[in-house]
Amino acid sequence: MAETLARDILARNLDSVIQRIEQARIAADEHRIVKLVVVSKYTTLENVRTLYELGQRAFGENQVQQLSERMHETDDLPLEWHMIGRLQKNKINKLIEAEPFLLQSLDSVELAEALDKRLEAKDRTMPCLLQINSAREASKTGASPEAALDVWDEIAERFPRIRLEGVMTIGAHTTDEATVRRSFETTRKIFDSLQSKGAKICSMGMSGDFELAILCGSNMVRIGSALFRT
Ligand SMILES: *Cc1c(COP(=O)(O)O)cnc(C)c1O
Image 1 (cartoon, rainbow, N blue to C red):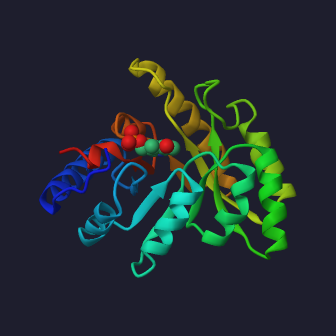
Image 2: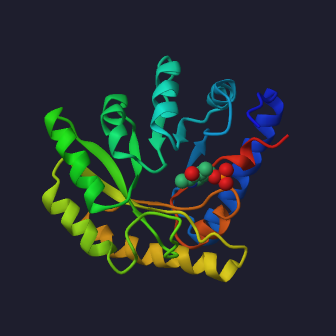
């Protein structure tokens, strides 16, 4: 699976993804900027370096260990690294030491409390997105849509070292487009309600659904497999 691809293949895939993002963006709102975060969890470090040479700057990993290793291995490059996967409490210190650009997967008040405590001890802050379980799936963590606004307020009030910058969701796990769309629209509504409280990022859309996510209001997409096809 983790295969190092030739530069021209990566260039072709990146161009194709960027063009598709651009088409959806213009169809949705020509004044919106949509940021691409390349998810490198299933690919090689060499591919990350090649994508950097092709102009890509933002990358995401879903495990603290690999995130931290890759941040070290690329510290000669001006990359920004995002943590996008479930954060276990016993990995919090390692994540803080790594200093990611953004933790996208802050999924509960409990996690926020544990994170804030360690941040305080280290006199640090961390930019985060509140993860929304927009399709109410048992397999996923995140605030339920009903609770999301209260969870945001509670984290903002109680945990000053967590800097909430927006929301993140993973679209409903189904091939039924209407259901996926509903999960994105639910998240978009929550994002809109939170903009007056400082929410700027609405991270939604992966390889299989990023155009739909952009049409529903996403301004950050997290794309892995579509970039690493041969
Ligand atoms: C793996 C992953 C992605 C990217 O998924 P692809 O389908 O490979 O584009 C995006 N977001 C999260 C949270 C992920 O774990």
